[in-house]
Picture: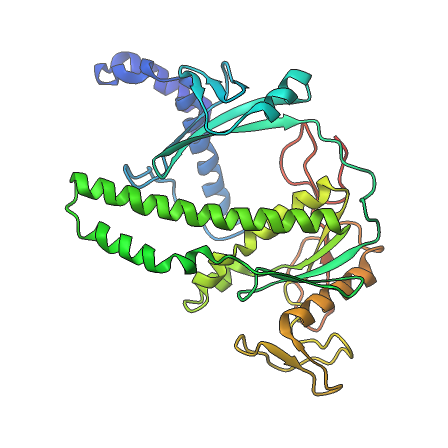
Length: 381
C-alpha cells in the first residue's frame, strides 16, 4: 500500500517531467503534501475496514472529489501562519483580511500559551473561511463552580433538550428548528435551481442562493446548540445524556429530517469537551436503557411507548408526566446512583440489552501535546 511519503516522492518526479503540470509551482507545497496524507489515511482506513479491524460501517475504496460538488478546501501545515487584529497571514497567500477579529488567538500566540499546527481554508456558500488547528495550554479547574450539581438531559424532536436537575427544576430549551422553519424557502430555491440550464450563469447564481440558505440553517442550529451546551456545562458539574443511535434514527424516513434538524450528535460532542473545560464531567447512559419507558416515581416499565405518545402514564402508581421530563428524571437518578462509583469508560464489548441495567460511560479529553481519544479522568495540560 502506498504511503504519503511514497506518493509525494512520485509526485516530485512526475511534476518535473510532464510539461502539463507546470502549474504546480503556483501553489503551496503543503496543498499537495496534505492531500497525499489524506489519501494515505483513507487507504489505511479502507484496509482496516475490509479486514474487520475498524469499527463502524464498511468503507469503500477512496474516490476522487467531484469537481463542482465537493467542498473546496486545502490545508497548510508549514510556513508563516499568523494572525493579528482582523488579518491572517498564510503561506503563499500573504496577509488576508478577515470579517471576525482574531485578537483572542493572537494574544495567546504572543503569550506563548498556544501554537498553530495547521490552517485549513474552506469555501462555504461563496464565502472563504480559515480555521486553525491550535495546541493550547488550557487550565482545567480542579473543581466545578457548583460541586455536586447534577442534571439529566433528554434530547427530543419537540424541544431541543429537556433537563431535570438535582433540585427538581425542569430546564427546557426549545430548538429553533431552522430547517423546518426555512423548508418552504428551501423548496422554492431548489425548484428555481433545477429549472436553470446547466453551465449557465443563472444556474450559478441559483446555486449560490441555495448554498447561502443551507449555510444560514447550519449557523442557526450551531448557535443554538452552543448556547444551550455552554449553559449546561457551566451550571452543572455532572451532565447525564443518552447514547442515542443517531444513524438508526436517520434511517427512519419520517423522523430523519426532524432528528437532523436538532443535531443530536453535535450536542453530545459539544458537551464532551465543555464539561471538561468547566471541571465537570459528561456521563453517557447505555443505549438500551429505557429512560422514556420507565416510571421515574416507582420504576415500573411500560411495555411500549410510541413517539406519538407525548405523555407518560404509569399503570402502577398513576403518575402522569411529560415523557421528556420523565426520561430526564430517570437519567438524573443514574447520576445520583453511579456518579461516585463510575470513574472511567466501561470495558469494550457489545452494548448491553435492556433489562441488564444501565451502564454509565464517561468520555475523557485530549491533553495538550497528544492526539486521539482518551478515556477516563481528564488530564490537566
